[in-house]
Length: 137
Image 1 (cartoon, rainbow, N blue to C red):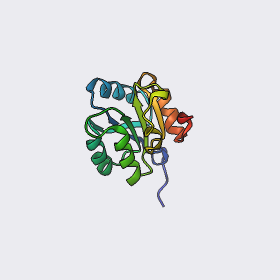
Image 2: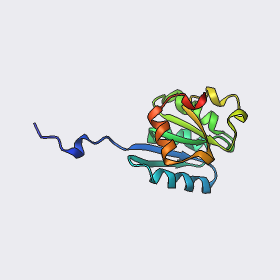
Image 3: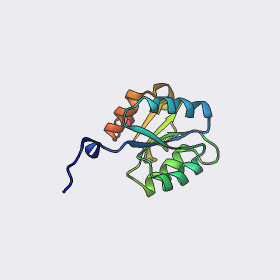
Image 4: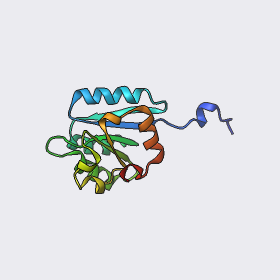
């Protein structure tokens, strides 16, 4: 039997999909993601519809999902993604204050909500590690 090396034992990177209809925010999300060891960009989408289709083919581990987008918003896209692939962790992002979130956000299947101003490597890593509902409290 072959001997395992350190490279064999290392965990695979967390594959992340960024979803936002605004290029500047996708750029900012990419910059944050590039500063998190063990996380890698696997896909980008500019709409809810595109996010649902890409999630099926790419199967990311984590999705950073904007709420306000065109025809299909991030809440509906999250609902569809988590209904068919519950192992995918979705973090909803927007400029809403927590008290101003649409009521449907909490029941979309998202693991957490994060204001875009709070997006940072430390916060994304913490939410990934928790993978729970701590941010909904």
